[in-house]
Length: 94
Image 1 (cartoon, rainbow, N blue to C red):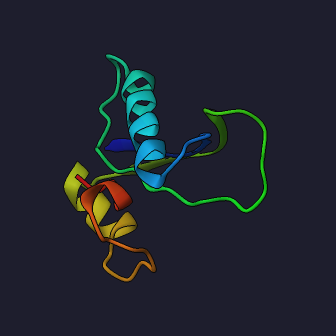
Image 2: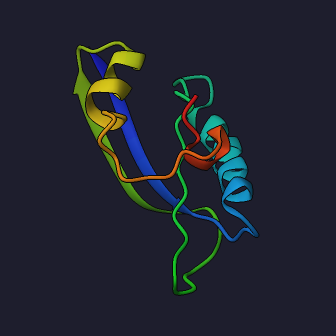
């Protein structure tokens, strides 16, 4: 059984690409030696200004028998998401 965690963090950035870069660095540090960052980050521009960069505002832990890429394909990136995919950095999907 694998345990997956989905998190939402806030970042002050000049662009979606910059926000994803910051989030990816933080996710790798957060995973540390005990976890593996699966390489999936997305950005969403907030209309209102909130708090400070890097604040976690959501976390979900889910156990699954699925291997990492199958987990992402089945539960996260099903192909039916309403998101832009102009560049890999926009969606952050590895």
